Structure formats: structure tokens, C-alpha cells
Image 1 (cartoon, rainbow, N blue to C red):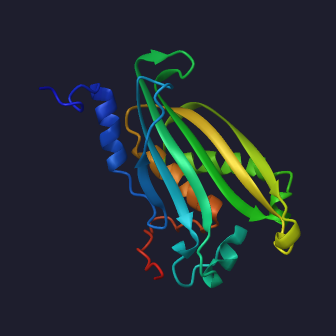
Image 2 (image 1 turned 90 degrees about the vertical axis):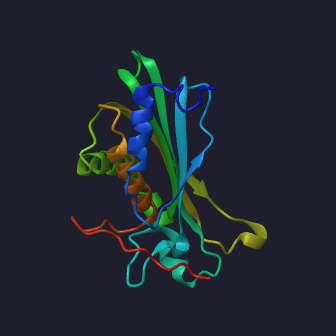
Image 3 (image 1 turned 45 degrees about the vertical axis):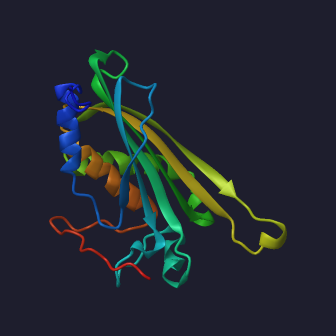
Length: 211
């Protein structure tokens, strides 16, 4: 009896192997989730989140509600995202290749920062910079950035207004080696959460979660 893995195309198996090699920041919780079935013949998906207790001691958040996380007994979700790798052995003229990466990231920001008219373009720049920093070969990138205002009323009126930023983006990797792409995207999720970037050549140390 032939196993399901043995029936997968060799290029897709190679891509899955490269994903397993990805070294993501320990502040990121990354898990495999059900992949969409209608977007491509083969797909794999991962979900990620950064929780408010993700900041090691002495690290100052860059933005967002992360600044209050240290004193929040119920650690808030600072950023969440999805990373989906699609594969069509016959290729796609729309993708310009056999693979396509589809991503989603959402995070909450302070209202003052969220009202910045340049925020959407900054979010897109964060993505391009992350891909470049990880030397991820890609083309045909596209995406949309959306700001969502949340205001509370009635018994919740004391809650400050907040703005969520959502970035939906996709691009075509230059090969079946997807490791750098997942690492770049995971860095993006941490950036959205307010985690400062790691100095070049310095690895993040595992942090101790609160009980």
C-alpha cells in the first residue's frame, strides 16, 4: 500500500522539507493548521500568534498594546497570522511558477499610530524588507493593507479606541526552498506584535512563560 506522502510530487516534498528547517523566533507560536482545499492541488498551512507574555525580560515593545502586556494577567494576543504554501505541478500563469505563498497578519495598534496615513505603506515595506533581509528569492508580489477602527460603548466605554492593521499578501518563491520565506514571514508577525528586531547575527534566547 502506497503511503499518502509517497504520492506527493517531489517538488512539494522538497518544499515541505525546507519548511521544517526554518528557524523562527521563539516568541512566535507556530502550528500546522488545515490547508485550503480549493486553491491548489497541494497545499500546507501554518498559523502563528504572539502572546503578551512573549517579551523576554528587559525587552521594550516597539508599539501596540504590548506595552501593557507585562501587567496584564490575561496576556493579550498581540499578533496573529497564517502562512499558506500552494503548489501546482503544472504551474500557473497567474503565479508565474509552480508555487505561491499566501499570507495574512493582523495586529492591534494604539489609535494614534493606527491613524497614521502612511501605516499601510509601512506595513507593506516591512514585508519587503523582511524578505530582502532573509535573502528570499521571489517575484509577482501583491497585497492589501487594511486598518480597522474599534471603539467601545456602554459598559465598555472606558476602553481606549484601537486600530487593527491587517496585511494580506502573496508572492511566488523562486524555487522549492521555502525556508527563508517562512523565516521572513515569522519575523513580520513579530514586527507587527511590537517585538524589536534582533541584531544581525544574534539569535533570540528562549523565554520563560508566566504560569
